Length: 259
Ligand code: ADP
Ligand code: MG
Image 1 (spheres, helix red, strand yellow):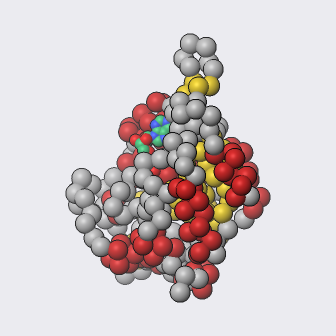
Image 2: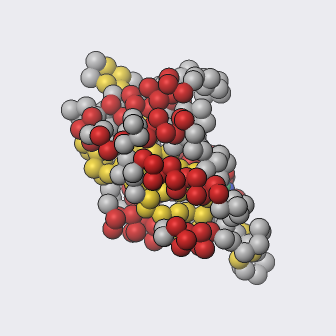
């Protein structure tokens, strides 16, 4: 049974009130899913919303590092306290629970799904306007079971121009359809580079097909993010909240209008 609509929003605990959940997916890893998740979270927070990030990428967790949040999550009989960024974005990730951030998680699918479900049910999130979920990459069993564990209102598909063969985007789109979750739109990451000398946009992989694929699928192209070394440096330094990119401003307005 793939119909995840059966999961009620109140399936969290008495202390959590989450208004909107948005899952960020990609057909494959390494396209910038975590970066886009983080960017949307920072932009929403700057607009004054209460924001949470649920790092459902159990085997490749990167959210705590991007925000420079370390150490153990604390807990009590009531539940698990989420981590907090400098600007009060709440987050939960397997990296906040394990001793060594370097040790790879070798859990199998059902255990991963169980952990993600607990992030939803047992974390004391408080009042959250927008919860962004950094999903496991791809369209296999693991993302599917995660979708069955959390009530997701909308999906954002992240792609890169290298995913020329539209199959990768279409797979993610089909997964959303299977789960009966609305796709809010597509974000293209690593879209172009800006020439440091002349300021011109250069498309490294030829003319991007993403706009065409998006319109074929009837989806908005929510935004295009250039390859920007400054963004990668902020991720590495755990200082992503200092980012001053406006590449997804329009995307955020679009999302707010739809939920
Ligand atoms: P995913 O979560 O899809 O695996 P990440 O968001 O972790 O991908 O991105 C992969 C790597 O590429 C990271 O090191 C990240 O900092 C870098 N990266 C992603 N998007 C950009 C970008 N637009 N400009 C520069 N570096 C980027
Ligand atoms: Mg990631």
